[in-house]
Structure formats: C-alpha cells, structure tokens
Length: 404
Ligand code: TTP
Ligand code: MG
Image (cartoon, rainbow, N blue to C red; front, side):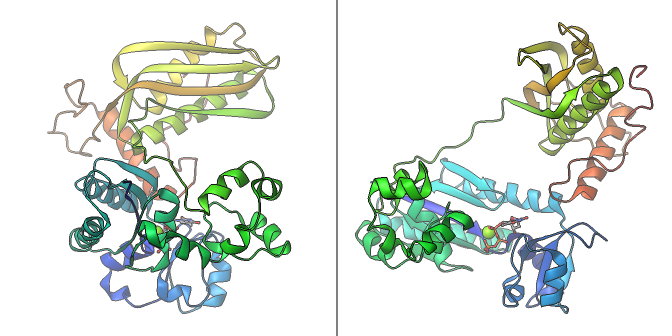
C-alpha cells in the first residue's frame, strides 16, 4: 500500500519573520521586495494580512493600499534558505524518500515507515510536532494514497492542519472539491473550463478523456486519471546536482570581442553566485557555444583543484573560447557550467587565523578567497529573491575584458 505525505509550511517567509521578531505576532505582515524598493511584489503575507485580500505575487503598492497599517518587510532569502535546509534535514529523520517541491514544501513517501494510514497519521503528527518544537514554525500536512491527493489534503486545513485521506474516502473527497483545488491548473485554463460550465471536480468527471484533452491539451489525459484518484507518480529524491551552469540564447546573434567577453563575465558571475549559494566548488569547466547555423560545440578543462570564484571561471572560459572553431562568433548561444562538484564550506570571513576549509584541498587561507566569499555573501544579502545581477563587486567586472 502506498502512503504519501505532503508537507507545506504555513506563510513561510512571514512566519520566520514573526518567529524572529515576536512583537510582530498577530499583526498583518507582508514580506516582499528589497529594502527601499517600492515596486516589488508580495512574496507572502501572514494569515492576518490575507484577511485584507493580500496574496503572493500582488504588487506591493496594491498590498499597501489594501492594508496601509500592515508591516512590510523585505525578503531575507539567505535566512529563509537556512530554515528550509533545517526543515529538510528534520524531514529526513522521518523518511529517506523526500522530494522537495519548493523552498517550504515536500512530498514524503511514508509507505515503508508506516504500516497503515493510522500509523501514518501518528507519524504526521510527530513531524508537525518536531517542526513546532525545533523550528518554532507550523506546517500543514496531507496524508493520502498518492501525490495528487496528498498535496490537495495538506491545503485543506491550513494553517497548522493535518488531513488524512484514506483510500475509502478518496471519491467522497474529490466529488466535493471545487475546481480551484485541482493543482497544476493555471488561471487561464480554469477560466476556460468555467466558461464551459465546469466549476467542480465532479463536473470534470463527466468529461471523457478526449474532451479533457481538447480542453486542457495533453495534460487533460492525466487529469482524467488524477480526478479519479489515480496517480502512480513516485516520490523521487533528487540526487546531488551533477553540474551547475547557465546559458543564454541571445535575442540577436552575439559578435564582437567586447560583447562576447562581457557575456562570458556575466555567465561566470551567475554560475559563481549559484555555487556560492549551494556551497559547492567544481573541477571541470565547460563552455558551450552554438553558432548561427545551430552547430553546437563544447570545450572543457578539468583542473587539479576545485574552484567557484567568478574571476577564475571567467579566465578559464576565455581560454576555452579560444579553443572553439570560431572564437569570434557570431554566437546564438553561450553557456558556462562547472561539473565535478564537491561541497565547499564558506570561509569564516575576515578571520585570518582559520585554515581554508575546501574539503578536497586543505591549504593555507588566501585573502582573495575570503574577499570573494565576502562579496558573494553580501550580494546574497542584497539580492533578495530572484535578482540575478550581483550588486557589488571587487573590481568586477574588469574594465577591460581582454587584458583581465
Ligand atoms: P507557499 O507555500 O505557496 O506560501 P506560504 O508558505 O507563504 O503560505 P501557505 O501557508 O499558503 O503555504 O510559498 C512558500 C514561500 O515561497 C512563501 O512564504 C514565499 C515564497 N513565494 C514567493 O516568493 N512568491 C510566490 O508567488 C509564492 C506563491 C511564494
Ligand atoms: Mg507554504
């Protein structure tokens, strides 16, 4: 028997802010944007703020109009990521089979750790309790025979809820749900269905596979099964990332040495900041290039040591560029990635006494590494969610890309 759990933290970013600033408890909290950035969007809002109609992705200005007395806080992504890591670590103590869905959400396969739904329910209580006592946060959980139902269930009694859907309850539950509960259905598709007079999952069940396909595309066929409680998708734990990379397809073909080097520098910066965020370094640098005739070439170099810093990545990317059949382009696409990844613990900043903590390469600390670390950390603090371009640099990018 398959027993699947779904965990979703309640008002995640806002709840962390309240936990860390108890004077905010009970108040309408809106988290979004960067410090002093009035044009951002709402990342999330506390349940108190949601009563004013405030929702994720709404412009902050609208949220302010709805609730001028709300407390507006900028996104502090590094802190939320740290809590997310604690959450996933905690969950891994209950089952090894965890599939992260987002920063605050995961599927758990409980089939091997609970003999039946009664035991799974007790386990879910224990998980929620552990989250409460160890993270001082609340989560909502669903337990059901498959992923589709488990995710629906975790949302039914938010916040701090637990809903268990036993196999014999599946039909009853599905037949009373409105269309909004069908996760994966976009707003546009929902509106299309509503225009066709379909407002609930019960209405959807009256349609044939072919009709669902006509309304929802190929996903419609899957929906036919999902709304009958059939979902065989396994919970799959992601392995460690094999490589970290970025690539750009250019709106106009990229030519000219300056422009090409500028893009390489941008790629190096993005890859480096991703590596810094995930505390990884790697030994194999790979440059990918696509020409205007769509021919694609890669060049790589494996080093005797691991690296993650933007300036090193950039230097190697420039070397690899010269090995391409036509280093001057024009390029349709350029990509840079780093493989052969190893964990890399960030250096304690500005503390000259401590040795470098590259796990693969104990050696004496280097000021330059420290500075790169510091820059990466500050950028992470400044960046908030989603912003791609690092905000400060240590003389980076260089004034002349050629002579760097
Ligand atoms: P959600 O789990 O969707 O929302 P939530 O945890 O804030 O609230 P709920 O109790 O309904 O689960 O997303 C988790 C976090 O992801 C959320 O706290 C902030 C962030 N997020 C965004 O930054 N933008 C978005 O549009 C959404 C939906 C979430
Ligand atoms: Mg959540």
